[in-house]
Length: 260
Image (tube, rainbow, N blue to C red; front, side, top):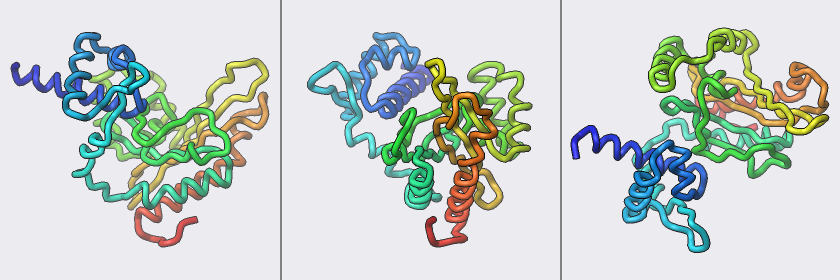
């Protein structure tokens, strides 16, 4: 095996392991389709991951799930911001105040990754996301808000890499980011699947630490009225989200010691 082949094999193995870890469990066919890999290649990688103890097959079906050994991959990673410890209580308070789930995301490579999520504690939820779930940067509210408020250098470097990896980005992306910067928040609307049903929305704001956009805070909720405009719908929740983001940023800056 050449050096390039070894790097490609490792990359594919990590890609599949990450996919299984995010979904909780997967079949070989699901992983092959999701990772856009040949079935035979995916099957060999699954076999290697099983032998290494990273995944195991479920007894009742043809699904494979991660084992506790996967946790060992993160033991050497020291997260200086301690999002789970510092930010989760405030995110949970936001969920209790609104009834809807909140999520805190940071950029990891060319994705936005969920670091904190309160979906399990929400009274109602539309889509469930757990820590470790990854989103696109340019097509999601969290990704666009981060790109709008990160430094110019980080934004340009990230967009250049995205263009290399994924091709040309949306033509109106600059306009979208300018709009987010003017408003101070991002909003994403999901149309209802049934006639007369209420649409769902995601409102996202930046989390600032030491003057830098460190992360984003999003709240997912359903519109109050089927025919109301988006600006009207966010009036009731936006102040709660902004206040929570300010508290989290201050906690990460060690400026306050209490949690709202």
